Image 1 (tube, rainbow, N blue to C red):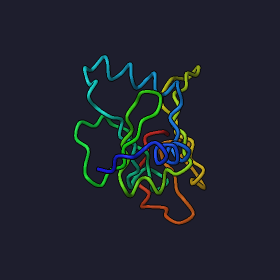
Image 2 (image 1 turned 90 degrees about the vertical axis):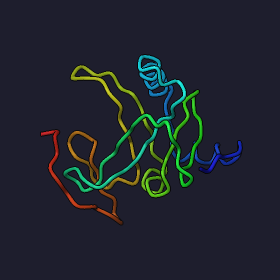
Image 3 (image 1 turned 120 degrees about the vertical axis):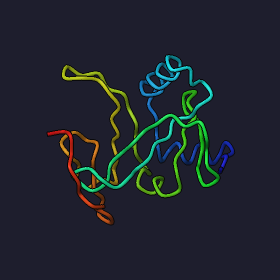
Image 4 (image 1 turned 60 degrees about the vertical axis):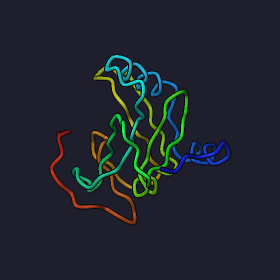
Length: 134
């Protein structure tokens, strides 16, 4: 596990941002599920209709290869591969007429699925699979 000092945390925080709204939503979910000792894992995996897809999960066991930092009181864990796809991304929590949920805005994505959960980059499109947004 890579635990970052203040300067390194600020550099990563500039690259992956968690909004206050997202932090509040994560903290609320963690409290309801009694997971106060967990972190938020943000990751990218192959799949979705655009080839790559975002994922988030509560993480109780951090791996040696993970990078961990904190924003707005939430510990965030990112694996060594996903961090390359997520540089510059912002994780937000939005409440809209058609529903509420987490939204990731990623400057590395050259195209995204209609639901915003699947994307591709100019360097790696992954292998497109079925999508549940249609």
